[in-house]
Length: 213
Ligand code: HEC
Image 1 (cartoon, rainbow, N blue to C red):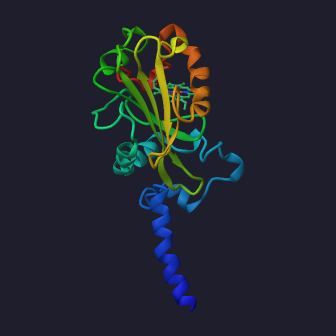
Image 2: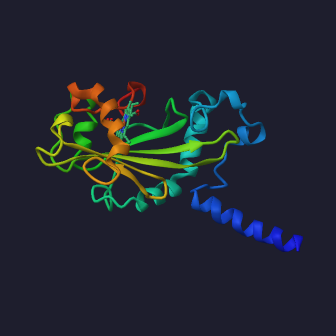
Image 3: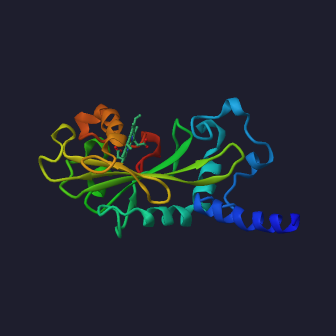
């Protein structure tokens, strides 16, 4: 009986891990050996200071296929089937313990790549942010996808007609402004107000930009 239960557990564990997007091979070895102390953890997992730049790069490379699966699962007409250009050199640590990278589609990239100096983007231009997280024991997994799409004039005048949307790593919609779950994404525009002089874009920090030396 016990061995049957054990066999069952061995079968179920990888299935539920896969459902959460966990890639067992993508684990930060240093943390797997000695997990970070609890009090050092940020809101979601690791505080940024606990991964070196090299560990961030290695983890992002290991998760590349899983991150692509997450993006493919996002059923958003502004996201599906598009090619994306990274707008920073690499994933970077955020203050929430996640690791982020911004990408732009063909309509948004020429302007976003000039950051504050860029021209205002036209209708349809889309910018997304991909993310992964790393738990205290070093286990990495894809995290949410954030979307900003420029809609037609008049859609949301308070934010220059950007539509904000957020998706879980399995592609489930968290919410979108002007659509389902819109109360759950109101805070997006609140924070992006800080960038109203630059079309509500906040831009990656200078040291991570494509032109940074
Ligand atoms: C607490 C502040 C804050 C909140 C809340 C926030 N963002 Fe952002 N967002 C930022 C910052 C700062 C950047 C700059 C990029 C970076 O951090 O690397 C950014 C960048 C972005 C970008 C890339 C375009 C740009 O502005 O550079 C997208 C897309 C985005 N956020 C979507 C969202 C969505 C969707 C939500 C809500 C679910 C959201 N954001 C909530 C702070 C915030």
